[in-house]
Amino acid sequence: MEHLEQLAREWYEYQGYFVRQDFWVGLESDGSYECELDVVAFHPLHRHIVQIEPGFDLLPAEEKERHFRVKFDAGRKYLHRMFGPPAGLHVEQIALVAVRSCGERRTIGGGRVLLVSELVTEILRRLAPLDPCSAPIPEQWPLIRTLQWAAGSHAAPLSESAIR
Image 1 (cartoon, helix red, strand yellow):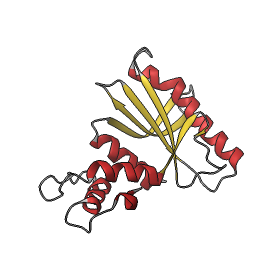
Image 2 (cartoon, rainbow, N blue to C red; image 1 turned 60 degrees about the horizontal axis):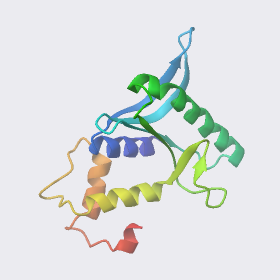
Image 3 (cartoon, one colour; image 1 turned 90 degrees about the vertical axis):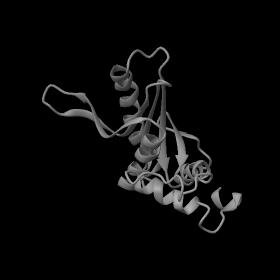
């Protein structure tokens, strides 16, 4: 799921969030940690935290639920401690998955389900107006930059249905 973590990290950094990837929380007395959070993004002006956990689409539903529950419970337990008092702090938890299992389920493990296709559609929609020749995405975000070129005016125009 590294590529999905990188895509999420780049997208949130591009939007002005401070992002940590592979963020260990819950230091134990033996030096180990309780849990690893895959991507944590914090926007200080909006006091908004986003925890993104790429999913394991091949796991049975009950194992997938348990996997996300552990991650999101740890996020709820530790994130407010690192970013200040919960008053005014909005924490959003996202399970980023390739396919939606269990029908049209919109939540899992206490977090919101977001399809990879939905994330890419949002990125393309936001980048489409930016001409890659005159306003290129910086090289530090190679995946987002690639999507900008895909959505840019130099390429064949993307119809609204093509980016849905």
